[in-house]
Length: 284
Image (cartoon, rainbow, N blue to C red):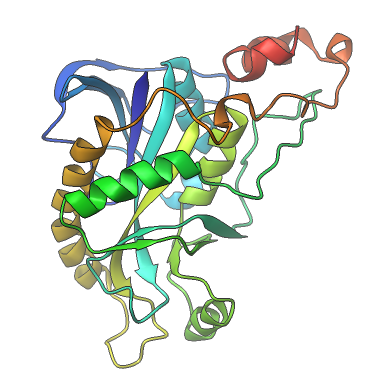
C-alpha cells in the first residue's frame, strides 16, 4: 500500500518524511505540478506532491489535476490525503480548526475533471465523494494529534483566484456550506475515476468575508494562520499513515466497474493506452 499526500498552500514538504527519491512522472495529460517525493513515514511508504509546485507557482485554475492524480495512480498510490487551506463559512469553524468535509459543491467553470473523452464515455457515482473509511481513520488521527476538528460538512469549490464577494459568501452560507476553497473537488472527481480512496484535510485559515465582525480576508492574515496549521497537518498525517488499513469497505477500488458506456471495440487504441493505468482492467 502506498499513501499519497497532496500538500496545499504552505505545505510544500514534510519534515517527517524520510526521503528515498524524487521522481518526475510523465502522463498523457501533461506535466504534474512538480516532482513526486517518495519516502517513508514511520515505515509506511508515502508519495508527496506539492499541489501548487515548490514555491507556490501555479494558480488553482492552472493546476493540471488530471496529471497530478494520474501520476499518483502510476506510482501505485491507493489512498490520497489532500491538505487544503479553506475559508470558514460557519462561526463555530474558527481559524486554526481542521475540517473533514464529506460533500462538495462545484462552482468552477474552466477545469477538466475527467480522464474520459477522446472516444470513451464513462459515468461514475459521485453521490458520496469522500472515502468514508479514510475520513474516519484520518479524522480520528487528527483528534489524537490534538487538533480541534469538525467531521463532515460541505466544501464549496470556487474558481478563484479572487476570494468571494460578500454576496457570494452569504449565498454559500444560506446553502448550509461549511468551508470554501479552490482545489479539492477536482481532485476528488479524478481520484474516484482512478479508484483511489480520497479524503480532504481542510485547514481553516480565516472567516470568509461574510463575517463582518472580522476584517475582510487578506493574504497576509491567511498566511499567518497557514504557517500555524502546517505543523498540525504534518502531525495528523504522521499519526494517520500507520492506521490506514489495506482494505476499503466503501468500495473505492472498484468504483469504475460497469461505468464505461462505450463498446471497447470502438475505443481508439491510443485512448486505451492512455487509460491503461486508470481503468485498463475494464477495457479488455
